[in-house]
Length: 181
Image 1 (spheres, rainbow, N blue to C red):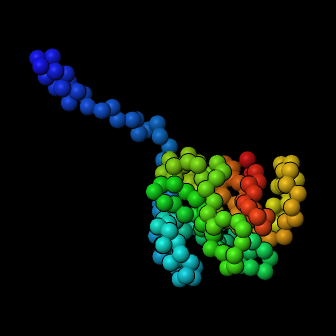
Image 2: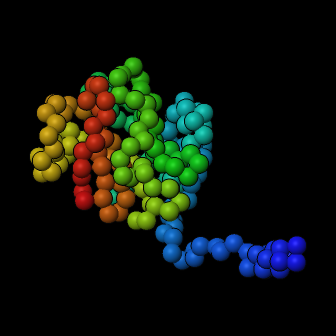
Image 3: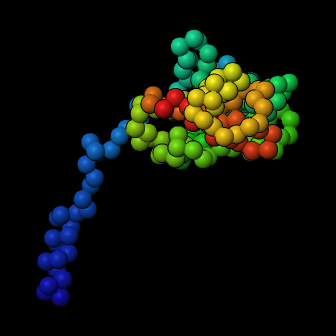
């Protein structure tokens, strides 16, 4: 017992070693609720709220197009869908609100942009934006992608200031295409 008391006192005084906060990257992006995105339809905001999504603060790309919650043709050229960069419990994933049933999942959780803890995203924060068929094809050729399916609608680009991935629904599943590294 005499030995146990000094050990307990020492453990109490020393306490657990806190990690050096300066060693951890910190994402400067502020998260907001879907209600902050007033330019999207109410049904899309409700869809995101039901999934407990927080969104990176509303921003626009250089040409004025919105980022992080976007509407395009992600399954086929005549179907308009919505995609959002959804943060739940500090983990990023893409959620898609399909207008018609498709074989592609309504959530994307794979790929390096979605593997980091959001608050520690090292390159200044994440973005989501649509990417057109011509750009998908151009990068597919440039990076030597081995997929052979036709590209006839938009994809979803997710990344940070350093690099990104393009996700493309081929009618069956999401393809991951390297881009902008």
